[in-house]
Length: 607
Image (cartoon, rainbow, N blue to C red; front, side, top):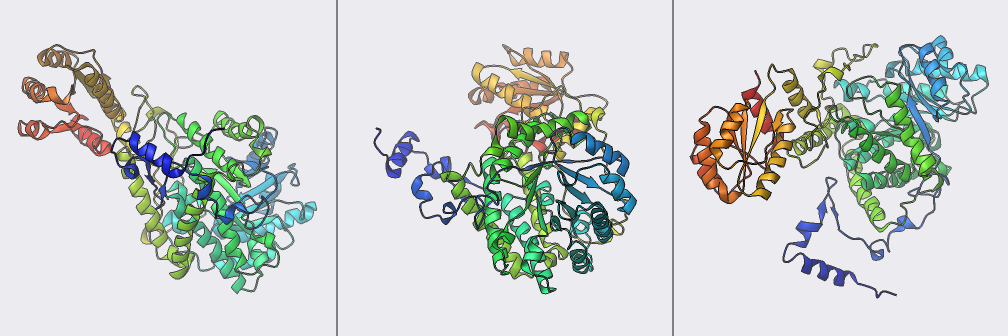
């Protein structure tokens, strides 16, 4: 057997290998959630944690609310009429889907009957959304339909009663009838135990760029708001909790997302417990998870499949109740049959090939995941408490404080993308420089048909909804629409290793704007390189060499070019100030704000 190694011995060895570099700066990761992640975790890190004491299906449900991991695979049905939606739904039910999402503009009895005609309600979860102002009508007509069909007890599903949507999307106040309508729906749906309607749609936060602890903290506060509002109205904790449905997002931070769902179940159980339910099972958090739109891209769109697969994987490991995989082409068109099939198959692969539905909480006991679960729980709990102290979730939404906090995170993440601190493969790093996307963009935002957006401009603060890639995409689309696509010429000279590395860096840098890149093997003199660049019609000449050689080569190349094209030095050499004094103003390096730099070049080059 190998001898045991203490943390102190391991740490001493690592510090020796770092050769004087600071351990914390090199190996400890400071998360956006506000806590540090260590490079190693050991058994002693979780020895005192109570989260490891329970089993799946046991309170406080950190390890899952069920003793199996059979999550439901949902597809959102996109159709122009109830009849068309019904036909599409019947088709996809033969392809591995067991949960359906519908949208109804007008939830009349006829529309519901047409929508659900021929669908085995006992075998399929049904989820319907409409304008929040029509949810009472939807509830009445749905319950009437289920009564007629004798399906009151067998029905599983939800109505998306999302009273915060007008505030988050249009900047309006939460409707003054939000709670009274909720009370009316509570009475309507009493005969249907499997119908949840009190929506906590925190996926909107994920899609607006919120950090993980923000999504969870605000989701808990939103759910607690429903518990307080309706228990104050006379309903029991059990009655209210069993009507709440959490619709949560999934970001690409794999282990953190696993920990988020585990922490969420634990915290929600403890929140509901404070309302003194008669049955502990009422404290189970019912979660539908949806892969993110925030990190989806138009360029290199197939990379979206890698993002959503990772996200679906983490949600499956975390033990969600149901899941939607967003099709990869969603940012630029209405998903087609191909992209919807791939989205379905992402979950089917996790079930049929990876067998994740056969194992409950496979991350349980992991030193890393258990520690992350507690860390995220602590940060989300702090946010939850702050919301409660300030008057509750609805009050903060009406005051715009929730939106402002999430929008601040969104702006920070857009800045991180602009500076490549957050990477979007194919967009701000390693772009496909020959890809054109303008012709494939079909999608246009559609206004809600029910009129809920009326007078939105005069209201408060909506959530920002720009995807992380949107700024780079606007930049690149401007290049595509320009009369002449700028040409960037790599003037490679001198030290072989450095010129190749800097040419590659510069190719990636300028490729993010969609410019045509002209790379070269190398030149003997700067004059030869400049002449070759002008012969190719270059708009930008990038000098790629080593720091030591720039002091001589850069002024010579700049002088010989004589303003006939833009001149750029690749790197941030020690002689930069001397080069600036000689008139050279453009440098590209790892500390640049890539987006702002390319915007500046677009302003100069695009005609």
